[in-house]
Length: 307
Image (cartoon, rainbow, N blue to C red; front, top):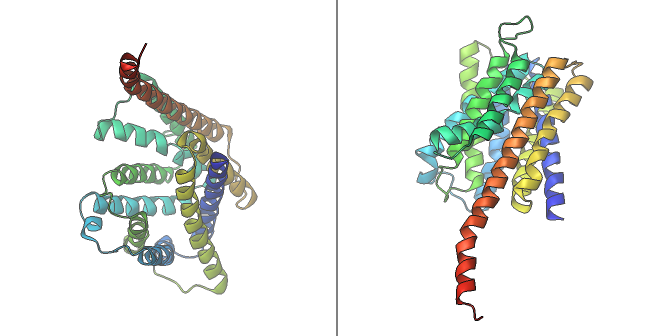
């Protein structure tokens, strides 16, 4: 039952994140992307600041503002700038398809920078996944859109964020880390306004409602994914993260009138298949390692037991 609830929460989280993306994309046609990031940062940051203070966490704890924690926050800011800008320029279905390569990049980063062992099978899967990315991006071909490179930049930045999360002091609570992440959007949004030369504009009631929708669904998605990882087995819930692509395609078709072509869908299928294989292979290796570590204990227990 816990796994079933975890799966449902993951699916709900992916739907919530897709709705957040929908509001961002819709608003980006009316107000500057930098301003959107600032408003998202203020709203969502306030929510997690309140959660942290309610729990008695120290938002200014020294451990939260040094080393890996600062680098993680910077990676979050870069990823948000690239992702939100990509949403404003590229089909939401294409953005979601390329973004599914994130688990593959994290696996590669863990092998290259954290010393984790990755065998030839998983390296092969990573290469297949990147082939899927090339099918979507299509560099040098007629359908190439340079703006898609922003999605790749966001994938690299978010992968760095997730890898750096492993290095953040364990005494820093998740609420504080989340507050830092959303607070960084305020700075990122201001920087984006300066870089693009855009000026903040007044927002009307309809835009405020959409902005609140983005904040509510973003926070709800975050809460759902955290809860899911706590109550469900990773092997059961992780594959359902790919449901975000399905939701994004539906929103793209129904809301924005997009029509993903065969190359995009084929590339997405390769990315998802390679990602699932990589995940299942990792789970199998973990199980084998557990069995090997428990075998000497079992043999020792058998040796001392009366015949």
